[in-house]
Length: 311
Image (cartoon, rainbow, N blue to C red):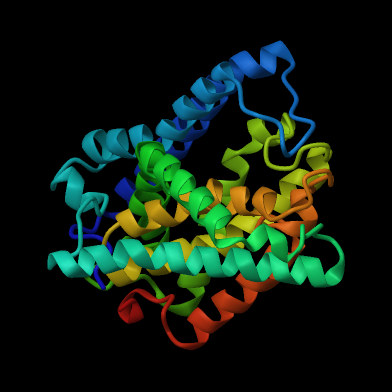
């Protein structure tokens, strides 16, 4: 699977990566500045997001895409932006539909497995089988899918940066060669690209972590490493979807599901009066780490995480 249609030289690649990271991180901090200045702090996982918070989050999510577009246009200089960032749909149309439906099944299955594991361990307050009423679940799913579709443009803002720009360029060898198609420099380069992408993705969230965004009530020195583990484990899943389709679109759908429907599943099937702690009951917590780790191990053992095997 070709990740880059045009391989930048080592010097251009390094400059592009630096420009991308500086702009993406600066954009996140700038977008979150009003909330940080106001002393905003999220203390409860069930807390609704206000208008100002939504505005700041939306602006932050667009920063990686803007950074990627500027790096491609003004640093790499050459080739089409759509091809440089994998902004295309798989062909034929039926394959595109299948590629976009797959993330829904995979992420819902992984989330359900994490909730079951948490419930068995006593860390997830499952509301009981009454919460699985088909009518109630169907109504929740429809509402959630509509909300997820409406939020897709914001998740394009993130994944154009992380999967469209950062990962394939980190995968290139240090000398700027990528096997002619951005395939990278073997297992070591592949593992390094996954680790660096996941870590950069996690640390980009630092302003929100300082405000309790992903882990309400948890101090930053627990939240930062926890999200780093989560991102390092979930990035290979997003990348697998990107590799097998040759497009960032399935990764966008997967990210949207993980950040909306997956979080909503935790609340929907929990005891309404119970306290929710993402660190102990979701894909962002230890049950999710076990489930994601097992799935990533399966993908790795079957050769699905390498570009050449991403079918």
